[in-house]
Picture (tube, one colour):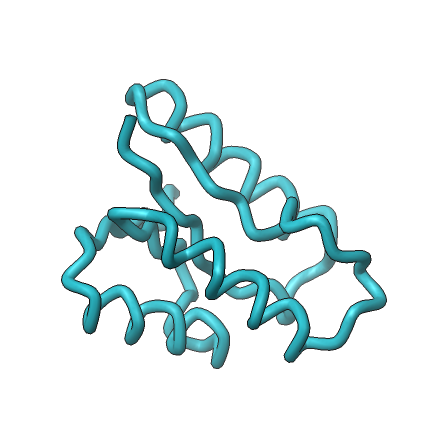
Length: 100
């Protein structure tokens, strides 16, 4: 089953909106028969540093064959780093568009 890493801005919205967005993306990927990797479930506490989360998330990303970029990903330094790694690794890149 194809593993797809979910990447998006996790700092510029309230936590409820962030978790809801990632959960919806995770459900959509499962519905498509894919295996989503949600970085919000990386096993680290919310109190861990940004750097610690990035190290863990990059480790998770490298286990995947595709990345799903959520709306607003390009405003997030972490998502831009993840997209760059995915591009260099020639991973499939999927984009979720904003719904009206």
